[in-house]
Length: 423
Image (cartoon, rainbow, N blue to C red; front, side, top):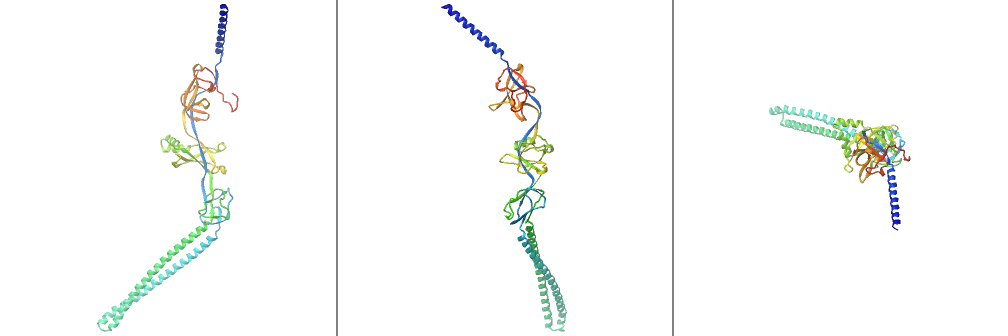
């Protein structure tokens, strides 16, 4: 019985030993994981930014009525190119023509009254001359009669009559001079009437001219917001808009921080102005295609929006054929700065974990080190790594999910694949 038990234990120990040997050999025969890697690249890279923009005409002229009346005629085709001075709408001119005719008649009457006042002045001045002559004769009579009366060559009555005649002549002179002043006042009043009538006639002619709504610029005219027969007035709002579209403006907003960061890179106003002149703007249309013409910086607005903390920037783009239209949305893309000696790794090589980023670096003896990194800007399909890797190090791009620290791997060069291609 004991011998049987001993043999049984021996057989069990032998089986266990054989199993351990088999597992050890299997573990030794497991090949290392195959991963695909790339080298950390170092080079100078431009940093591109994109901002949402809105297209606007270079000049947008709102056409509004300046007088009240009924639209009699529309003189353009909606959406067509119009010339400066071309008639867009005609408001019924007849009431305004009647006002012009009435103002002209009132002006003629005022001028007639002015002529009459001038004639009265001439007459009053002539009367002054006659009165002064009469007073001179009366004064001479007094001077001649006075010594004769002392000599009793004439009666005292004759001298008294001469003195009274002289006083009457002086009074007539004063009265004639008063008529002159009155005539001058009438002239001033008539001249004021002429000026008022002239202003009224000019206003009437201006209002008559306002019945012709013409384009103030060369451009493209929009849809007519009022039709023939509509009653329009200065309070009625815009009737249509004419815009110049070549070149066309694109407005976009940048944050206050982006604006300050851009300006701090240039030490003098001259270098800043030169950089602005050399900015190369690219327009990405709403369908994702780039616009064929490059743009240039136009201006920065005078203020930062207190609600959004952003400042509005305008770029200019050539627009032959008026392909682009106001109101379109597009993206503005340009490089406000560049990074010298940037360390680049593919974005797919960087894992995000709990708000942090890490990469798998293949080091000596093909051992993997999971390393935390700090990322900066995205450049195409790459990340700029500001801290955590060195130039030339190998980082894992494919096979990250199965890796941990100190795992030995079999690194292979990473080959980019098309979308949907099998790995």
